[in-house]
Image (cartoon, rainbow, N blue to C red):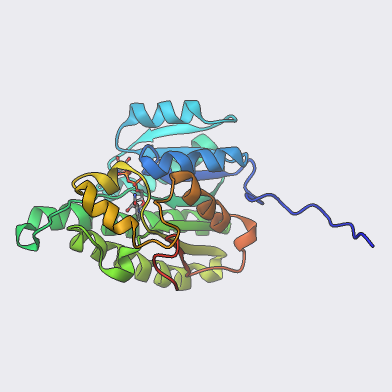
Length: 261
Ligand SMILES: NC(=O)c1ccc[n+]([C@@H]2O[C@H](COP(=O)([O-])OP(=O)(O)OC[C@H]3O[C@@H](n4cnc5c(N)ncnc54)[C@H](O)[C@@H]3O)[C@@H](O)[C@H]2O)c1
C-alpha cells in the first residue's frame, strides 16, 4: 500500500523574503553561506571589510534585494548602526550569521606577541559579543524573534593544530558565549547557536600551513577529505530556519567524523 506524504518544507523554511546579515561574507565559507541563504529566497546583507567586494557579492547573488556593506567589525561602536543599515536595506531581519574571523598562525607559540593576541581576540571574540548583542537587542526592541548562528571551529574542542592556539581560544569563547547568549535571549524568541567546522577548503585553512601538515590532518578525518564551503553552508541555513525552532545553545560539529560528539 502506498502512502501519500505532504511535501516537506524546504531547507530554508521561514526564511524566504526575510533579511539575513552574513558577516565575513566575502571569505571562503561566507560566499557559500550568502549564496545558500539567497537560494532560499532570503535577502542578504553581505558584510565584510571591503565594501566593493561585499557589493559585488551582493550583486551576484540570486534573487533581489541584497546589499553589500563594508565595515571593520573591530569598531564595535559601529555595530548598532550596522544592524540598522542592514535592516533598512534588506527589511526585517530574521538572522545574523557571523563568520568574520582572523587566524594568525604562529607555529612556535613563543612567537605569539601581544599584537597577535589583540588582533584575533578583537575580531573573533570581542566583535562577536557586541554584534550578537546589537542584533539581539534590535530584535528585542522590535518585539520579534530570530536566530543567530556563530562560527566556531573544531579547535574549540581540540585546542587546534598548526599554530593556532590563540585563534582556538577565541573559538572556545564563541561556544561559551553562544550558550550564555542563548540563555539570555531565549525568552525573547531569539535562538543562538554555533557551528564548528573541521577542515574546510579555504585560504584561511591552507595559509601558512605546509601542504604535508595539511595532508596529515586530512588523513585523520574518517571521511578522508576536507569539506567544501558548500557542504558547511546548509547547516547555517538549517539553524536559522524554522526547522531549528527548538534548537538553541547548540554547537553543531561539521568535521567529517574527525571529532565525534
Ligand atoms: N576554513 C576552515 O577550515 C575553517 C574551519 C573551522 C572554522 N572556520 C571558521 O569559519 C569562518 C569563515 O572562515 P573562512 O575559511 O571562510 O575564512 P576567510 O578568511 O576566507 O574569511 C573570513 C572573512 O572575515 C572577514 N573579516 C576578517 N576580519 C574582519 C573585520 N575586522 N571586519 C569585517 N570582516 C572581517 C575577512 O575579510 C574574510 O572575508 C571563520 O569564523 C572561521 O574561523 C573555518
